[in-house]
Amino acid sequence: MAGQIPVIDLEDFPRESEKLREACEKWGCCRIINHGVPPTLMSEMKTLVGSLLDLPVEIKRRNTDAVAGSGYMARSEVNPLYEALGLYDVGSAEAVDTFCSQLEAFPHQRKTIELYAEAIYKLTMNIGRKLAMSYGVAGDVFNGWNCQFRINKYSFTQETIGSSGVQIHTDSGFLTILQDDENVSGLEVMDQSGSFIAIDPWPGTLVLNLGDIATVWSNGRLHTVKHRVQCREATTRLSIATFLAPPKDMLLEAPPEFVDSQHPRLYAPFTYEHFRNLRSAGKLHAGEALELLRCKN
Ligand SMILES: O=C(O)CCC(=O)C(=O)O
Ligand SMILES: [Fe+2]
Image (cartoon, rainbow, N blue to C red; front, side, top):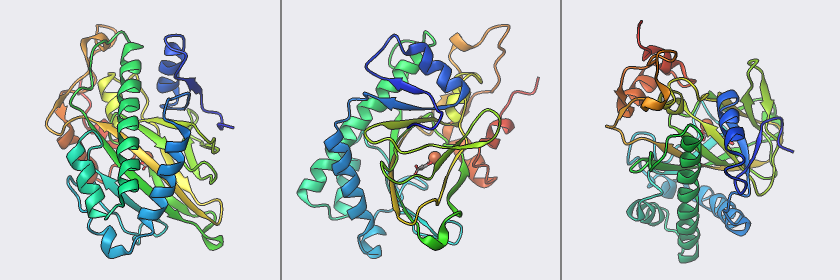
């Protein structure tokens, strides 16, 4: 079951176009079925993620930040149950290679990462394009944008049930493709009434989340979804997130399709780097930074 979030069949386009747009405006979130990433690749990737995060900490630490926050995140006082490794650009063969070398990946592991990176990169771009198309914005809107990748491990135990795995946040980029754990629950998204609802695992499918930049790009139409991970079961939970985000120095503004006399421009143009700095300096991790950038009229 998919909780109550909408389910989008990626093989059924353009028929599902309006449903995708509606899901992204109302929820900022949906389940994607028939997405084209082979189930065997998904499960091989999941096994690999488990092995990489089980490596000794001195090896994991070699996965350094290429851009702020892109590398290894050890367990901390703020997030004692959470640990992650990251790759700053799945679209770059060099970045994939560096990631594999840092973690001393075996040849078959390297192959799995390369295949997964390729498949998920294509899917991310495809979904971005479909969403843009649903507003009549055609062309390669997201060409040159960056696809960052993070693999997450939650060390849940009996004692930690009820506590937080990852605190409430929005993703900062445009969209996120999430391979959530196919067995272990914990992901929750905020609905329109402000209540959290549990997203139940659904093997073979993926979750689409929209981030802050989607709201800016669409002049306020697309919803950046607040979400969190709670410990609900005493077992390890693994997930794989791919974030589509603009290049850091690109000036962000909504395309003309979103702006008219009824819909005046909500945000003055700014760069993604500026936005990220604003978010981290003010610890504005749940969409609040958007308010600071609204046009004052
Ligand atoms: O682990 C999950 O299911 C969600 C992870 C997440 O929200 C993130 O990495 O931004
Ligand atoms: Fe997230």
